[in-house]
Image 1 (tube, rainbow, N blue to C red):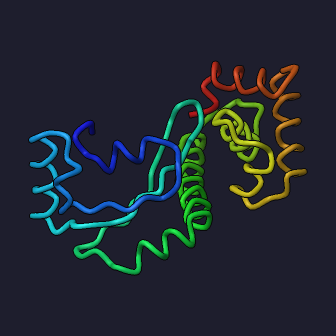
Image 2: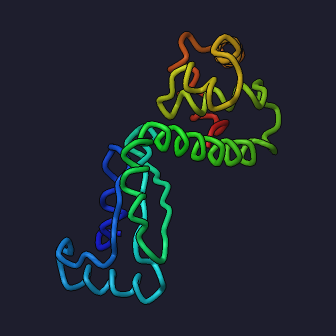
Amino acid sequence: MDVDPVFRGGRKPGPAFLWDCRDHKAARSARERRFLDDALSAGIRAGVTIPITAGFGRFAMLSFAADEPAPALAQIVQEAKEVLQMMSVACHAHANARFVDASTQNVTDVPLTQRERQCLAWASSGKTREETAMILGVSARAVRFHLDNARQNLGASTITHAVALALRQGLLP
């Protein structure tokens, strides 16, 4: 991971960025040049990566790779940075929601509904009610309703307390 310049760049919060494996001047070491040569031999020449901040120091990234750089790509990325960022966050959110759904299916004797667990999981990732609403495709009011129900069902005094209790009880991934 420390030898891949795309991975290194994707770890930092920020806008989408373009990369080109043929740019050996950017390589910091012989290992990194070998890595770039391996990517080239596998047909990976260029692409765009969108960093995603996942909360609590976690991160993700969405990368599109191509066998040839597209000259118009730089302009498209520049003009659509915000859209690319929202698209990436939504993609990550849906993938993570599937993971949360799968990880909570077999929990028994738990005083939380699946939606309450999802809302708490997103709260534990640092998402606001509005962000969670967008991710889950519901209103912010619905998210507030589910978070309040979860808080009451867990006997917590705050949402933060509810997240902590749910994590301790193994109700969240």
